[in-house]
Image (cartoon, rainbow, N blue to C red):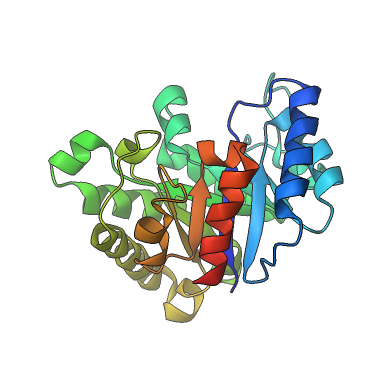
Length: 254
């Protein structure tokens, strides 16, 4: 299983000109880099999915930052799993802490999206993690357990190779504060244990477990390499191809 380096561009690149500059800088920085041990996934805003896919071709995978659970219909402003898939996406981020915080998404809603994504052949990147308050109340174990179990409710063992889980402590997102490597490793072990209990070890071992939350070239050793994660979900650093590809190189080489 290749490691994954996922770039979440969030609500950025405000014009086609910015998008084209991003492509230009990414091509320049990635030239002559050998990144054979990883798969790079870029998740731009919806309006750029097709442009990113046309630019990326087979060299990179493209993912969406979210989607609705219904395939089509009267859901003004929403994007369906079929639309995401037909735009050329392979992945979709679901349950990101910002979706939970600003749009009040619950595990049950995320579960519906997971099932819908799998139905059309998308690979869901499911974000789980505790808030600062939950951490202080020593509720991290229970929070992660509930999120994993409820978000994966009803998923069959045969689909587990398509599942990606990103451990994303909410208090670390965009704060430049990251957990010690041992804490991240404990979260990975916990998630794997939950998966084994739900699906059995052979199926659970097929799931990639990433770390997300203030990942940059300075912290990637601590948050990804030392805890033995299967890759990283990168936020703001993915907007700068030079920094993003430095992270990718470190993960590729460990």
